[in-house]
Length: 123
Image (cartoon, rainbow, N blue to C red; front, side):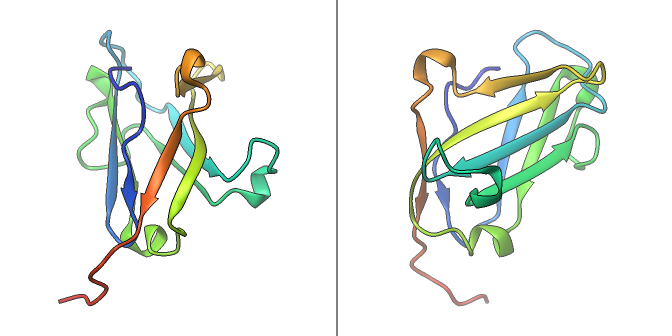
């Protein structure tokens, strides 16, 4: 992974996170999921956000070169309360191996910030 942490999300905006392997790896069929929680102890059911994708499903994906996008549409981000959340990004390979790829272990308390939107009208 090239990124150290996930950038902020503005609620109400479409959000697209590029996942790119540092070493070119064919990731076709790999499943990626992102979870945001208020507290480490929260159950998965209490997560503020839980979204997933499979490499090769999004039009911009290039799984043969290790690139996948996790897209969160504006309808979902609009429901996210502003604040800071613990998160992780995990991957399940086609060999059924599950790995947490973000945040790095040495930065496990990293947070993602959900920033409030000012304009709410859709033109």
